[in-house]
Picture 1 (spheres, rainbow, N blue to C red):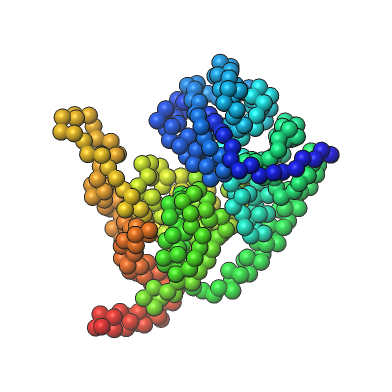
Picture 2: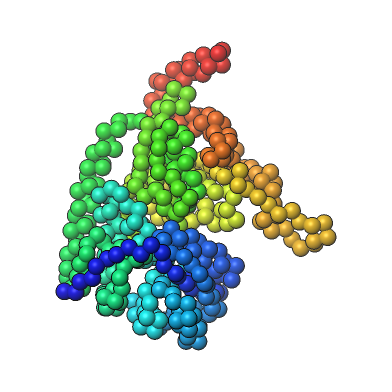
Length: 407
């Protein structure tokens, strides 16, 4: 057995590496690297440089070509870089070869996200889920990973599954994975019981890409203080609150945000947490309309939801951050086709969004714009579910609404 002590580095200088391939152009790679830089910042690193190479497919041995790797190696030496982060998942072979060549800590997007989750996990349930995902990620990488870890003093990507001793024995890792799965089953049973004890109240779940403002909206609607921060994955544990709108009570849950290239290990281990989504009667899909690629983010969330639950649920699209929305008007003599950044918010509302009618609303949770309109929309949608479940309560709603109009 080999030991090393995990220590937290305050900040690490990092470089980011991505590929332009037939599947993703340079503009898309830059966008992915912007997100990777935000992930790195969330983890505590400073992205000081980017390296992009155009290849038909990743080099199976070193991910990038030999010449590009030499260029990266030279930059690392001259600038005292301690961390290289690759935008795509590296195979065990690529990880070993790159680490051997650069002689610094190597992470891929998956390892970085796992590290952030390890940092953010607060409850025993979330910690167990993250620990399981980490071990599943480590298992095929044992041969090169542990020799790499021996030389490191800790920092981003080195927050292990909660231990100060890392066993290199494959059998022990498999044993830990089996134990963690059993622990999760037990906690799952407890959570199922908790959900049953909530009675037959209508359940509404907030879903969306990470950092779109779900927790801020949760705090507004439930008058609670769920942790909210302008960083990725600020919320990791599912929070459930009772909300009352116009005298109609329902349960509102805030769930972990989704992201592009979300590690399969995390989707698998966090399926239990996302049971709130599966069991919800209504979804509130929060979208950051100020983000330049918000439509792609919508697709990512929908694809992940489809992977979790094939049953399509009633959904309200809430376009948040209208206060941050901006556009660049085209000059009169510019005859090129208009791009996304040249379109105003009012014009956007008249596109496919205009066909959503009562399933779509534009708000700012931060500035509290159109929140009352959102509450009225929620009331109508929750009432539909409630009346369908308890048809004999319909006259109560009619009486309440009649009184409300008279007031």
